[in-house]
Amino acid sequence: MLIITAVMVFDRYFTEAVMPLIEEEYGIDIKKTALVDGLFALGFTILAISPAFRYFGDWLSQKTIMCIGMTLWTLLTFTFCFVPKQWFWLILLLRGLLDIIADFFLSCALPLIGHMFSASNRRLAIFGSQLCSFLFRLIAICIAALVANQFSWHVARLVSDIFS
Image 1 (tube, rainbow, N blue to C red):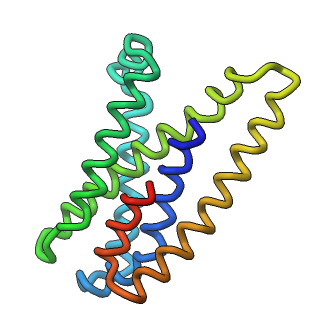
Image 2 (cartoon, one colour):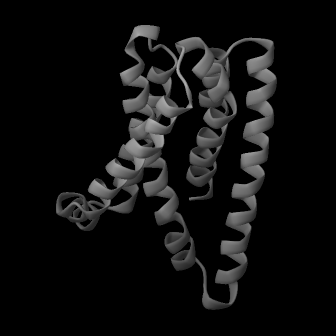
């Protein structure tokens, strides 16, 4: 669970660190970038309250759900690197889907970690998870900035996939 949390946090903050380069290459402004957040909020709300997704959450095992989610996440992040300039709408769609998957896993992480430990160790385990999440954010931002400055944001995204 800690590994999945690390991957999701790493991806989100890695992308945020290179977003100014993406905006510059695609010729977009902050208003269009804000569409990503709006798309995420709308999509997550629809998926979070959808009876179909709650049904799959009860029907499938947590292991299966995590495998499906990680496979989708890997395919979407890899695809994100190769979107042509004229298809900005696809970047919005991919980023929205990635954020939905990431927040789904991050919202499931704390309860799952809580269930894995006894009552006496639960608080320490959740604290450790949150501390690692913070450290992964710092590492992701630093690596993204270094790689993007040396090469391009495309290479930085591929490095994100490799690290994850």
